[in-house]
Image 1: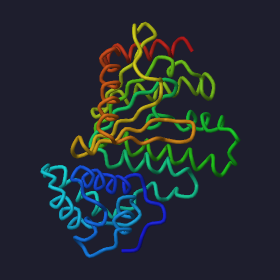
Image 2 (image 1 turned 180 degrees about the vertical axis):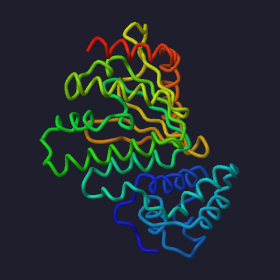
Image 3 (image 1 turned 90 degrees about the vertical axis):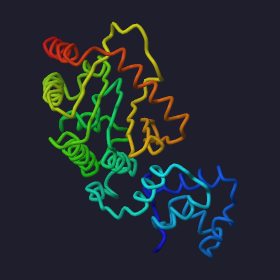
Length: 283
């Protein structure tokens, strides 16, 4: 198989996990390469996601590295075998790569949790709300690129908020509900959309009110995508330079704690819906 020019974050993840296993086993790249009669540079390419690896080789490496977690190895082997061209690939070259990586991460997640302070979660945004956000990007986007971002976000919402979507849990700060992106009418329609989504069986929506007596974390937007096993979870953080993806266990534990803590401090689902209705009346 030929090498990739731009591996996705998910493809890179397979390589990262293989490197973690190799490091834990105390093996060198040369020792790993000798299993297949390869040059050590090929193992380096595999670990960086540039070179595909088969499920068989994943299992051989895991065996040589004495990895005993069979569920983890099975899940990693399945990831290595994926040859799926997702809907997000239609936007490659038109939107930032990070947008595609987020869509890919969410598509393959077993369950999604998100915590947002200043914006409604991207997957729950209306078209006009999303357009208003992208209109504020600096430097300003050309119309074609702006519309591509809006279309990408609308499609992302269509996938995640469909009736057969995977479990989706959102914790949103009251501040995000009161932001008037696109004007008062657009903000009201966005709140209506949130209320509609909150009624869907696979969606859980809770709000942190201004009366909350504590705040955990830095205020960054967080998405926690659960993998087939906890070791393959991913956390994505919003950042000025683009999305940041985390997968080290200490990092995952830290952000799981943040989301769990803020969920515990949020209003109940019924109270959250009542607050959204109240905010809508005040706008």
